[in-house]
Image: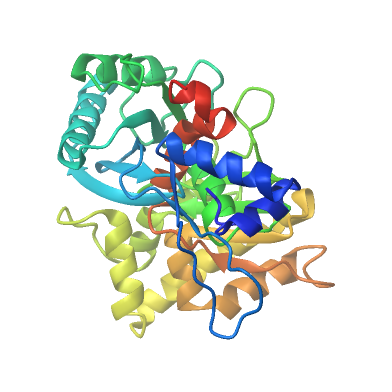
Length: 386
C-alpha cells in the first residue's frame, strides 16, 4: 500500500500470495492500527462481473512522520503520511551557522508546530543533509556547502532537539530519528513513489542549492557502500583545468555543474532575494532565448553529460533520473543532454539509457520520511505499540 501496488484487497491478496481470508485479516489489523481505511461498501465499474473488491486507502488522519531537509539557504520541514504524501510543510530561510543545533532546533520547532496544527500522531523523524553521512552513527562527514565542522554528530543533535521539544511517539517516548544524505534519500523516494518505479538499477544525479550529488538504488535497496559513503559523484573530474573544488581537487562536477556555475557561465550575479536554484530555474524557463543563457546551459549540459557517461560506463544503470538544476537543464534541451551521454558512453551508442526528470517536487523530504517510516513498514505492531 505504501508504494501504491495494493489499492484493493484483491491486489493485496495477489501481492502477498495468500488467501483472501488472510489478506482480509492483514487489512483489518492495519486498519485497527490506524494506518489504513478499508471501504466496507466497495463498488465496481458498471457492467463488471463478480463481486467488487474492498478498496484500501491510507487513513486520512493516520500517523505521520516529521521530515526535514537542511540546505545551504536554510531548511524545510514537513509532515509525511503513509504513501509518501506531504500533508503539511514549512520552509525556513536562514544562514546555517557552524553549530548544527541552531538550524536543527529551528527545524524541529517548525515540525512541532505542524504536528500541533495537524493533531496527528508522529511515529518517527527523518532528516536529509547535503553531506556524506557515516552509518550507523549519523555523522556528517563532509558538509562542504554548510559551515558545519567535518564529523558533526547530526543525528545525535537532531535526536536531542526532538527530545527537547517533546515530540513523542505512540509509546510516550521521543520518536526515533534518522539522518541521510539528501540525494541518497531522494533516490529512495523516487524509486518508491516517483519516476524510478520499476527500475532495477536506478542512478539519480542532482544539483540542489549548491554542489552535485548522486545515488544508486539496486533491486530496491539504496547502495551506500561499506560505511555510507558510496556515489560521491560530485567529485568526478569533468574539467581537469577547471575551478578549484572544496574537496581539494579541480574541475569536479560539484563546482562545474551546480547553480553557481550556471549563473557565472550566464554572466549573471547571484542575487540574495531567492535561492540560487530558483534563480537558475527562472532563467531557464523565461530567458532561454537569451544567447548567454542558452550558451551557459549547453556548457553545463556538456559537463554533466560527460560525467553521466562515465557513470554509465562504470555502473550500467537501466534508468537515470536528474533532479534540481539538472532536471531544469534536461527540460530546457532534452535531446542535447541525451546526445552527450550517448556519444561519450560505451553502452549509450548501442542501446541508450533512459534519462528522465525526477517526478517528486520535494523528493529529499519524502526520502527523509522513508527513513522514518521504515521501522513501521518492517513491523507495524511493534512500532505502533501493538
